[in-house]
Length: 297
Image (cartoon, rainbow, N blue to C red; front, top):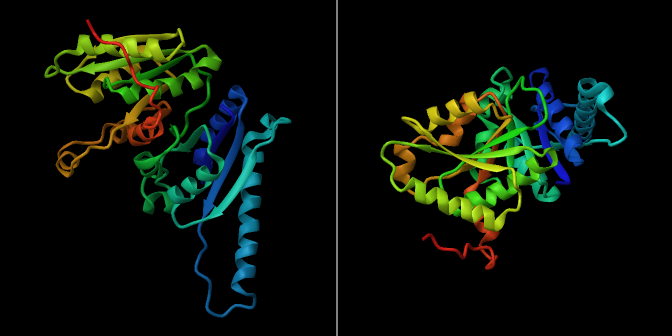
């Protein structure tokens, strides 16, 4: 992992997320790019200076705000490995993050949770939810007030899909530098059948494609997926929960079912690592050697 992109609104409430991103980048020995997105306030019709001059001055001001914010929050933690500060003007924060990520091609994009106390946070909706819909990169959502304490356990919620294997392979890049344990859990609801057979398939697929030894598996019985995962978090005490963003295929499904990842993003108090199913499928679609050749007995 070489490049991390973290987006901030430069407010006090998200200062712990900045510290988390910085400490995480140091542990991963990765370059941290900190992005601040701003929008210009309407200018008066009559003004002494031209709009271009005002915009240039405002850009410089926002850049100074970002640099001062990082220095103030990180203080003595800023070592010889400097962070890169990026300022972009855009009415849409998710759009600006995507534009920046397209240029940087980061290994991980990091954001804080929605801050309803700021006008932009209230009116623009949840930025993390917008990013989850179409992110091409793993997305780490850090709740406000969560401090970085390393990584000993990463909990991955599986639904026994081939894309899960690719996502877990990406999760290994985060877990391996720490020697952290990856616990792959499937929440079993009463209506499910053939789960044992599916778990055998998943274990074989991971063994075939992933050489990381610190991976264990668990089936968690619960009345629903949400309560099952929350119970796992309470008992296993992971530092990160990883999930696949599975956008439902039909309009009927979208109408009838809540999106689990978005629900969990509101409920959990640990960082949430999100992989987008469509992006993973597109990434590995042309890799003909990336299929699973074994069969179940």
